[in-house]
Image (cartoon, rainbow, N blue to C red; front, side, top):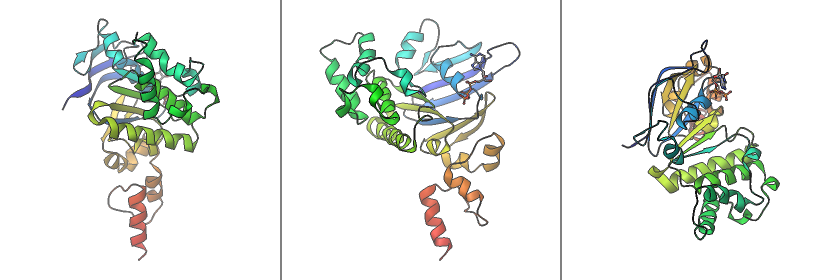
Length: 273
Ligand SMILES: Nc1ncnc2c1ncn2[C@@H]1O[C@H](COP(=O)(O)OP(=O)(O)OP(=O)(O)O)[C@@H](O)[C@H]1O
């Protein structure tokens, strides 16, 4: 399987008295959706910055689709990665939604004849085509994040990193972005790799794989069910479980393995029969 990201023996510290990453390793296959979780200050955003080459590792290697990240390759590597940040309001530059999506394409010197089609396609993928002439600041938080995602998608990245992209949204906004990400996965399959950095375990549970880090160290790595079965380790690292997991913790009789919400409802209904 092709590797989208390979991090090998990464060492990084912001200052001399705190080593953040000290021999960190992580491999992400192309087409995987990885949720990167960890409490505040565990190093998640720093890892994203290192992958994007916004900051340089002290030592170790980062390969993106087999290309080693160096001063010479950083622009090419970055072209393959789209980034969506926490605050949707900080990501808008255009007067209309369509202008906003056009901005990145113009920077990439996309021929103007191709732009309308590319803008419409990206907006339609995130379900925002009908809003293309609207002013971005008039949209809801969830709609703004979908436009931010469309601006990234228009540039046809192979990897999208969403850093707390749902943290400022209300439950409806969060749900629409999560559905949009699920749609992206079914539409693009192996052609898109998603890395979602989050504190929200109900968001993490949708990923193919959950990676828990703490103080720059990988603590847990596996399917959501296997990671969220490790109640003690999750709590010990200052994290919560998804809603279903928190509920199970309060039950006297517990299921043998980790169940998601739907499975738990079925299990509970059989328990009372
Ligand atoms: N520019 C910086 N200069 C010095 N230290 C920094 C800088 N940015 C982050 N740090 C420190 O590095 C550590 C990791 O921070 P980072 O932002 O990567 O964590 P995080 O897991 O993304 O946290 P959060 O969930 O709060 O966003 C923290 O101790 C933080 O204080």
